[in-house]
Image 1 (cartoon, rainbow, N blue to C red):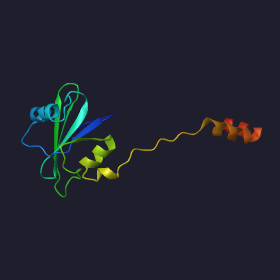
Image 2 (cartoon, rainbow, N blue to C red; image 1 turned 90 degrees about the vertical axis):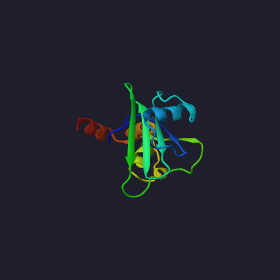
Image 3 (cartoon, one colour; image 1 turned 45 degrees about the horizontal axis):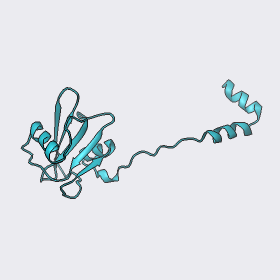
Image 4 (cartoon, helix red, strand yellow; image 1 turned 180 degrees about the vertical axis):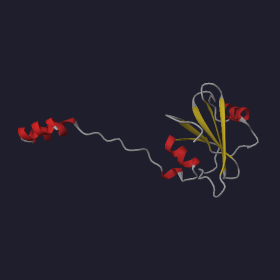
Length: 136
């Protein structure tokens, strides 16, 4: 996909905007309506009145990037129209841009193996077993 990548922060304007606006017009919406800096590193997502269109703007370090997408079939899954701003995760943004229901995407669970459990398992194994495993 051409667009933002890596560890990104996403803000969605929940109220539809005039889709005749370009990068500068949407940057003005970010400053005036969303009350934030368009050069802050966030990805800003905008919707049209028609739910099949989306625009993103973001600063890539060298300039403002404008990405536009129109679905051929179906509609994007949008939150209720409001004068607010909401956050999405990178995975949720990816689902939104694919035309999927981003509300069903959850962050991956992080699990860690407790250090005590791995030590107690090694202690319960016979020394011959531990020696043969380390030789393998």
